[in-house]
Amino acid sequence: MENDKHRYQAIIVGGGPAGIATAITLCAKGIHCCVVEAHKTPIRKSGEAIPPNAKPLLKQLGILSLAENKKHTVYYGNKSCWGSDRLEEKEFIADRLGPGFLLDRLHFETQLQNLYKNTNASFYSGFKLKKVVSGEKEVIATIENDAETITLKSSFIVDATGRKASVCRHLGVQKENLDTQFAITFNVKLSSEIPHEISVEATENGWWYVAPFAKNEVTMMFFTLKELIPAKENLKTFLQDELQNTIHLSKTIQNIEIESTKIMPAGTSCLQIPFGKNWLAVGDAAYSFDPISSYGITSALASGFYGGHAVADFLHGKQEALDVYRYVVENAFQAYLHKLIAHYDLEKRWEQSQYWTNRLAVFKSETAS
Image 1 (cartoon, rainbow, N blue to C red):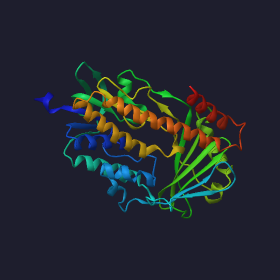
Image 2 (image 1 turned 90 degrees about the vertical axis):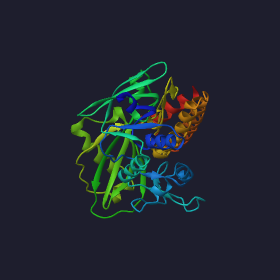
Image 3 (image 1 turned 180 degrees about the vertical axis):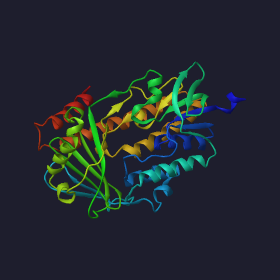
C-alpha cells in the first residue's frame, strides 16, 4: 500500500513558478502528479517584473488574477542608462496590453503554491531530493526531511529545481555555462522614498539593477564577471565604488549601509537537450537567462506551461511531444541569444574593459557555432 500511496504518473521537483506552472498544467490535463519542494514555506526570490506581453500566458495558465492582486503593483516601465550617459524611460503606455506587474515576489510564490494545493494534488514541502534512478519504465525518486524518507515512483520526472538542475545532476546530465556572470545582491533601506520602478545602469565593470522591495527599501544587484569579484573583506568597498561610478543611481541612492550580501550565478546556461528518457527540464533547470533580458519569471512560467503539455501528451502516447517541446524552447533560446547580443552591443563606452569585451565575445562565438 505504501508504494501505491506514493506512486504518480509524474513527479515535479521544485515548487517555484516553473514547477507550479508544470503541475497545474498537468492537473488540468488529468495527470496524477506531485510536487517536491525543499523549502517548508515559500522564499522570496529575485525577479519582480512581469511585462505586458506576458498577460496572455498568465490568462492561459489561469493565474492572471494572482498578478492583479493588490499586493502587487502596476508596472509602467523601466529607467535605464545603457549605451549613453542619458537616463531613458521605456514606458508601456502605448502597449495594447496595458501595463505589466511589479510583483511582491514572496506573495506571488505563496499564491502559486496555494493555487496548486487547491487542486488537492500531493505536495511534499520541506523535502530534499536525495536520489533519482531512471529505469526502463519508471523513475524512482528518494526524498527526505528531518523526520522521514519517502520513495516516490512515477512514469516521468520533471526537473524544476532552477539553475542547479538537481534532477539532471542525479541522472548524470550537465548544463553548459556560456559565461561567468555573477550577481552580488543585497537589500538597503533608504532615507526617503523613491519611485516604485525598476532602474538599470551600466558601469565599466558591469551593471546595476535596482527594484522596489518594501516602502523605503530596495533590492540592489550588481552584475559582473566572477573573476572581477574581490575577496569578501573588500566586497562592500567594491560595491560602494561601483555605485559611486554611476551617473544617475548615485544621485538617488546615497549613504547606504550594506549589511549582508549574497553572490550567485547570473549568466546564461543551457542543457544540450532539455529532455531524456523519462525526464524533462523546465525553467532555469533547462535554460538560465541573463537577467538583463527580463526573461526570468515569464520564461519559467512559459516553459512550465509548454513542458506540462508535453509531458501530458507523452504520457498519453504521443512520443513526438518531447521533441516538440525541445523545438519550442530551443527556438526561444536562440532568439534570446540574438536579442542579448544586440543589447550588449549598444554599450560602447568601455570597449576596452574586461567585462564588456567578455560579454560580446562569449555570445557572438556561441551564436556563430
